[in-house]
Length: 581
Image (cartoon, rainbow, N blue to C red):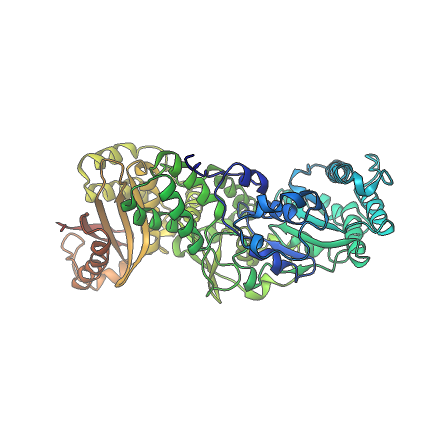
């Protein structure tokens, strides 16, 4: 009987479904044993990093109901070969606060109780053999009251303990924060309120050992800080190096996944290098605990790519999951309270790709009022997954996906049109591949729209980033792009790479950007028209070409050095002696 090919089950967050539907799975089960040594772990990660799937995995591992399914669900995993004594030994309460509706205090409290009570009712019904009709969940009662009744029954009847999982613990609270609904937020988290009361019951349940452990995930630390007076037993492991790779994919995990996919789907192995560099540029680059740690891929964004790749064996036109575009709304809401602060912060990232931060603020108390202060923007965006560690003093944008999001917002803030008038120059480029004309069109249509004040801040990073964003917007059917790709002799600024399955396959266009301010350019004592290519710049780009040719020996490679001078203009040098072997 032929082997059934596995599938990419994109956006599937149910562990059992992935196993039973023969989905690819990156094994994270080794972290189960590590978590058992932590009391009440709290683990925060940005959206779309696999938190819900991890919570589902914990549920299936600890649930006493799935004891007979252990071999089926955890065969060929680390924990399957190395189970802990607590496997399938608990009743599991798995709560998802992302479905709690927002609104006024009464609406939120009603929705919270309803969501929790439904899960509590399901728990009692599915564990009827243990509860034996000695407890019931009353929909008219608060979730805290019903939880208390269940915990009392567990203690009195010496039942298996409860393992509590709370996924997206702060989702509904974040909605209030991001819409500046501070009054309702403070009422939700106030002493004596329904939320703190619920967490007090969890704390009491842990102390009385009716609860085995409580695992909490979310995005921001604000709400857990607000709950500290009621729930001060949590262990914050978000910044612990030993849990860095618990969510997100390491390079080794991605390599193993691609090995399987290429074998299962019989994909041409000659495309592997291209795909490797592409996904690393787009989805890798996250470092959460320390700048020296291994970078991580955003797992859901990578699976978005692989879902298309397995289906069509081609590179998708749009490399950014449309769901990621919604993250721009977080940027707008966070910065929106002060438009000038928004411009300053977004312009800084667009120009330099970095922003300074205070590492102490990552671990100190984090409240709502700080969240919207300019000095905390970097920390807020770090937790939202839009910035990552570069060194002990600076954060940076992790990958091209995030660069695009911030360039788009930069364009919006400065009222720069990027959606009209560009079609003509892009169509012409596809006919003649004339880089000089393409950059001239970009300068005429894009750079000419920049406010005068921006010209005083420009640098090479701005040109390569914005030129890349415009070109990828219109040319991504035919090309992929590398920005600051590393070679043995340095990093190239920008590369156009013809997709292997399209008409420009084998084409490689390498660009080196150089920037001079008006004052710096005066030292050359010539006009821009008479300016000559600098010898050192030729050697620099040739160093990149040397590394590129080692990987793609049959590629048709062309080289360009582009000089941009203040607000005076630009000059493109076409070193267009194509190099091929």
